[in-house]
Image (tube, rainbow, N blue to C red):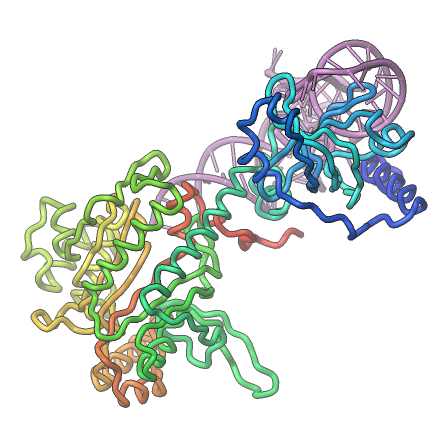
Length: 499
RNA sequence: GGGUCGUUAGCUCAGCUGGUAGAGCACCGCACUUUUAAUGCGAUGGUCGUGCGUUCGAAUCGCACACGACCCA
């Protein structure tokens, strides 16, 4: 019973398989010798504005290839659209322009989704669409499965994520998102290289997962019989390079964090980290502002961006305020004194229904209040500075206020996009901070950092004054592509396995 | 983890207070040499997410589970 039904269900596939068998019998079914001489986007850009007459008096002969997306057969002639990576182009295929029998015996048996190569002359149709009058056409690859419905496309988000290739075939919007992603990454690379930054690659597998506070993925190296961790950040390796004399380095690569999935979190995500010697955090805020503004101009052609119905202007100077200032700003009923001591801040947190654990110091409580009441309201591009030492174990202590660090985070649309600071290059202070993290780990905080003795040794050799920053590429791309979910900007987002 | 909504033909979706399943597109056949969601005519295609229950009878009602989308922590 079930066998017959499966056959019925796959009727269309069965038909296409039998067509493929006919093609195999006729010769090479998957030829590789076709060469196009142009992509259709270039033709549209160059000849789209030419008149019908201009194209007739000065005929342009072209060879193009792509996937057949639509077809309208009208007896002895047909129109179809083919799509390549640059766009769509209409073909006019007439029986009498092809060898005897080819139109009826071969062309008409091809299917939407098949990949074809063709040659002909550019012309304008009666309604003015640039098209190719075909006099040679070949099937290059037979598609055995039908494409999704042409008008609505794929409505099921899950299919878009699980079968991204179908989404890319069907959705111009989706193709555009990933083109913009590529443009942004290229822009950042060129921006940093132009400023004497050196692109480097540091270990993805680390014996001690450092540079951030997050749960790591574990793996095992058989030959060495040792536990390894997928990195949660490249930070400590990049700073070793600063010690080594590479005074400006950056890395754009994946980080892995063993935490939940959400519209803003994927277990592997792409991070830009860069470090600049003889600089401090204000320099990086300026650099970030310039870079983000440059990206906007590069990919959108303007500094005003629209994200999920809200507009943000990257043209104006970005707002800057400290953690405490921002809390007071968004909580007008609070006064400075309410955030000045642990007791007062704990009371504020309690009123906000924030659970305060015994181990929390003033700084941690302030950050909890910040995250609950401020973060999601930081809509316009904003730098928040002066993060407490307690939550910034790798950042340099501020000279005037030892309670805070020379650190900033960058927010747009209520989302954290970047995190940077003047690096802690005092080896003894760093050793002390690691010891404190280990204490917290032993007290049950499984996100606290490990003690990285090798890194402390590197610092003991002397790291010049340095500022460093990390920018979440995925979140940045979301912003510039108006994507509501991180999955929309990841080609292959992590999903629960099917069955 | 909690809440809301969803899961019906290859795709996009209808299907009323329970009475044995429908459209458009795709596919197949016929006609058609400037169409573009081509058009006209005809045909094919469904264990209605899974399981259990209520009922004479379940796509429809109830419970559980799976998967997904969105919101919240």
